[in-house]
Length: 220
Image 1: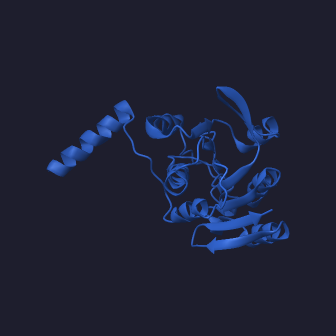
Image 2: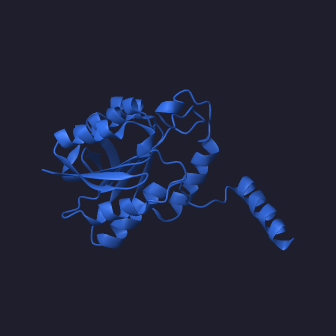
């Protein structure tokens, strides 16, 4: 009885005051941790497509803090439109009418990251808008204006169909650091062999292959 009352009270607080936690829906976030750990000469610039409740971005930032504590001015960009837009979960579900990623979720996410993640920079756009408007990089303002035009960690967790994943890859191929690691989520939801072949042609090497995630490394 007490547990039921406690749960109802927690749900009430969550709905009224946006009390939530940074959460995720994948068991292989350790691949993100190991990707950041692999960086030999870290620049501190990372990017995640598809934030939702933020666990991927949290893991990336936490890994920078853990493995590269002397690195200053780490910049992590999180891109997600939210807005209850239709979401492509896989090639087989391109016409999904599910609208799970609401503006309420966005506000909850921002509250959570504002508490202790100053590295986090949220961009409330879809990929098409972002790539069109920021072809030359993304501006960050902190004392001065700085254009972030190279990324060493990129987590691809947006729309899960081949067309959109290819669009995302093409953008970041033009914004590589001397060492860059791409991490892909939900790799069974589209023809991942085509992605692997494409990256191999671009001199990427697959370094981890899990049940849901895979990572590829590029060295200049």
